[in-house]
View 1 (cartoon, rainbow, N blue to C red):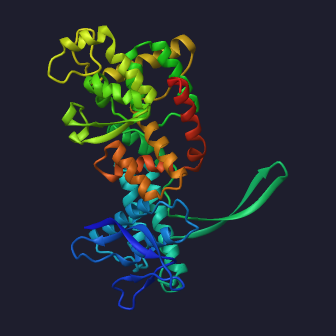
View 2 (view 1 turned 90 degrees about the vertical axis):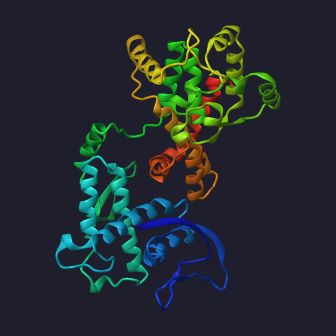
View 3 (view 1 turned 120 degrees about the horizontal axis):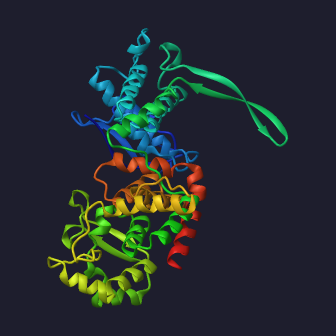
Length: 424
């Protein structure tokens, strides 16, 4: 089984193969620096997958690859090398028959995965793109002789024209056939819907403004506060609904309010919060939101309802009858809000409740990435904050975070929204 792991390595430049092909060395003018990278290894033999690992290290070691996602590249190559291992193929052997070459056979495998809805169209293209770049790097560094093998893929030079204010400018671009057909994009989405899946859709500036108007239209305090917990702290629907009242009343809450700082809370089975897979994690609640939650908990009517609720650990959000809300409470309220916006204001909000959590994740990761934090560290932090068990779940968010336009605009729009709704 091909796996990957994080590793601290001293390097300063492109790594080189050792004479016995058993590992690699890294030097630059006799000096070295420490980098945190991802390496591939065979779990059965314990040996490092040398060619793939060399490239993954280079993605981090080369200063021209700022914010390079070597973790998603590692996932792509892990999938590629696992496919070759399962099908008795080798990364440097390219038969005459095109579909017997590992690259094209892997492309067919990815296409089948996308058609079945097991893999998103964007993820499939990401994997194929990583494989292409891997081989181009091997050619450039003389680790594979381009002239002695059948081509792993076809490269084509295309002439393009950009139209600007000063007129058209012609330039050349290089494309390859290591990409998915455009027609599969719709197939992938439809297959995903059939399986109950959907793309992540974080709210942009327009959607955030619409959400703010929709919350005012809905005028349901528990829904508004749960919405804020999801979009500002990354809570799932069931996590927001099961927040314990004790975190917002009494001496502990009073002390937190005196500090006037962002409040870090631990959530999980230990305090009654129904986290996915019963996983314990920490969340950050902005001070202004925590203050509003404390005021909500302290209201006399809410206290009476809490007294009627069963159990030794009453929830913060309960119905007028003093009973816990049903699991789909927030989904229903979100649907009602969208219908009210359309009926009363002619405004469309094409977002589900879970998109609030996606908005938090992409904004949080964007801020970390913009601060200069290495991609692998951002990945680990976002994964921990969201409470994901598997890397593949976090990767969906990181693909959005990597988008340059997202990094440029997302943080500003979200900060403005936060200040407006919380009065910070």
